[in-house]
Amino acid sequence: MTTSRTLPMTVPAQDLPARVRIHEVGARDGLQNEKTVVPTGVKAEFIHRLAASGLTTVEATSFVHPKWVPQLADAEDLFPRLADIDGVALPVLVPNERGLDRALALGARRIAVFGSATETFAARNLNRTVDESLAMFEPVVARAKADKVHVRGYLSMCFGDPWEGPVPVHQVVRVAKALMDLGCDELSLGDTIGVATPGHVQTLLAELNEEGVPTDTIGVHFHDTYGQALSNTLAALQHGVTTVDASAGGLGGCPYAKSATGNLATEDLVWMLQGLGIETGVDLDALTATSVWLADQLGRPSPSRTVRALSVR
Amino acid sequence: MTTSRTLPMTVPAQDLPARVRIHEVGARDGLQNEKTVVPTGVKAEFIHRLAASGLTTVEATSFVHPKWVPQLADAEDLFPRLADIDGVALPVLVPNERGLDRALALGARRIAVFGSATETFAARNLNRTVDESLAMFEPVVARAKADKVHVRGYLSMCFGDPWEGPVPVHQVVRVAKALMDLGCDELSLGDTIGVATPGHVQTLLAELNEEGVPTDTIGVHFHDTYGQALSNTLAALQHGVTTVDASAGGLGGCPYAKSATGNLATEDLVWMLQGLGIETGVDLDALTATSVWLADQLGRPSPSRTVRALSVR
Image (cartoon, rainbow over all chains, first blue to last red; front, side):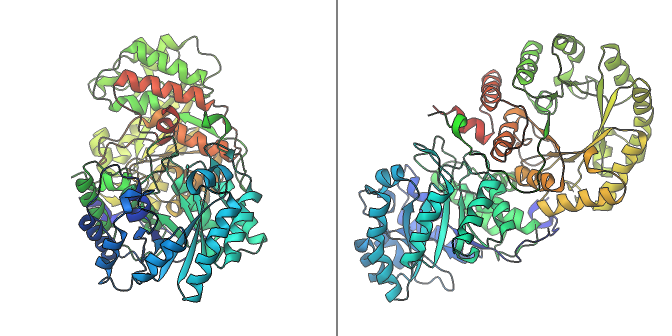
């Protein structure tokens, strides 16, 4: 019985996009929180397998200072090993001009900056106020755009913050607009601690639209800490969002959230999208096999329910 | 930091019900699949705690032959211990007239019969064809109704079947209508192997409406095998459904599904509903504490993401 080949049954729902672009973050957002050192060769094979499974955007690594994210300290070694991957976008995280220099020197054509909607997280994660971090990003984005490099602006803590509690929508909108005003090509709205619910998601999206940020520049990035990631994604799709961040096997997790549960698992997302008849280009069996392989490398099972269900034989 | 008291932030969404009745199935659907014997006293305390957390419907046990479900063989001992629970419905599963006799003798006022949308599951679970099982239920429902006992009709394998694959909507509608024609007061549509997706859910609900089964008689019962339970629930709420089955701590699991993942966790559901501003009457902290307590009794952690996140201190 190979359930993935016959199920889910495809039954479209009304008013949903025909196609969704999955922005795969497992190799960066996922692996940056691993406690054990993942060999560069394993990372390279992981990214190659993700690309081969049909994903069109695979975030590769981060050019943050190795002191802050030792797990991704091998970015210079890793990125050139991906040069043979064709037709798949490989964005990299870049915190500042020094990181941009490193990324551009290796030929990166898509970068991402990482902002915060709250002052507490900005202080803890970036050692700056929100406005100081925007000032830090300004020359990064400007130089990238001058070089025709695509820029994504991550915005974390868009729904709740572990220190500040609920985050007001207008506060998120202000920083989101500021990131777009810097010249970002797209935004990724992060529910870093996984507390969002569907009405909150749709209200934030509507407010962003009101303030001139169109839906087609917005991606959503949900964590599954409270099991809410997929229903929030459905709410975002119903609003018209067509870019969804997810992590193969559900890798990852915010070190500031209270539990280890991580990103929305790409396989759980693909199951829903396949059932809805929404195109992603992803081969669910190939992707699941990749996550099972990586789980073996990491020495612990994937938290993705779909991966676990499909890999029980 | 007690996240559950400040988060999720309540932001209603459009066109959702103001109130949802949670039909808690942990003590029956959950515990019937446990490998170890759960003492009757633990079950009684579990149900008392569930009722005290604000749940208004707590399915208590099953009057099926002890040979088939040995875990619930203590129904005669358990049910009288719940007599002091006030204002909370305590339905019990009843497979046939013998089970009905046992339930009525103890004063049960709500029963449930358990049908199948597919022939293979009917044969394996009930040792009958679908129509033979309906014939078995007929006198059960008739006698219950004559006694003014409320009758719920479970219908399993409504979306997929592990042997038959996808289950055609018209096939589900036929059996659902037959159960209602017998005199059932409500239906519970079961995604026993967890394969449903939102469009499939809404299509089945719409077809049932077309065939004369109104939404207010329909409950939904999702399993989280592929991580789809909560997004399917959201889709059902958007259709107008106001009765949702869930299992405290995510207890349970279908022995015929490929993995051990169980029912939609009540805590994950309450998190979403609380965020949406939908009334349930449930105190999430009390419910979570109950699931943590039961997990200790069972000797393994709850699979509910919300329970795990809220119980990390």
